[in-house]
Length: 252
Image (cartoon, rainbow, N blue to C red; front, side, top):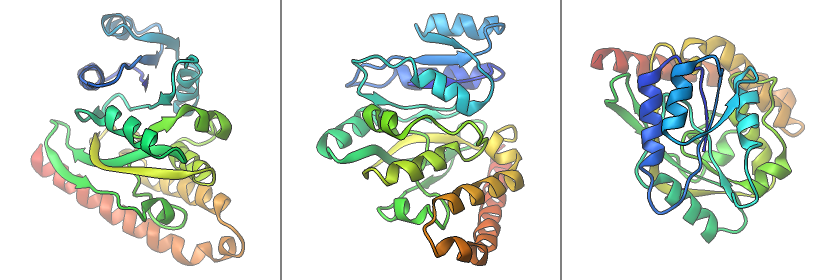
């Protein structure tokens, strides 16, 4: 399980690591990528017996560096932000879904959205159409909690380090061409919605990058038609984000 962090949110990071350690039914090795100058995070990594990697700069590069630590015995890979949480039994559920679906490249499920204090805001229950919808509509496949088949990631290549906000989406679009997405239909993770979250604070810049990535993976003639629906999707996403932020502020 790859955990990239700058070590700036120690309380959240500890909760993330606790949620990994609490997983049952499967053995998990933790890889933490962070600036080694952060002695507090180094001490935390030692406490959780994590493999440590010096931060190469950039989230995508950090995830790639973490994945590169996988050994032959590692069949599955996941990564999680330092402020998100795995729900109990989520990794085991993802692994079992992949074992039951040999043609699946990854397993995904539902995702709780929580506020800064961990209060539940709502649950994103991604349906079976979510993988199809992501090409032109909103991406409803929650990235926290995804379990990747290592062989599929290896074949797809590294996360694109040019992408700051859409690295997960771009990888999902690549992987979708190679195999199925297995839906566990279980809540696998929690995404923490807070004011310092990268995806929360830079909505406009993120939407622009996301639209560019989607266009890249569209087939002709849909690429030329994309400008017709992109503004609608962007507006809908902005309204949804505004609503979630309002919900979170009421709980805080």
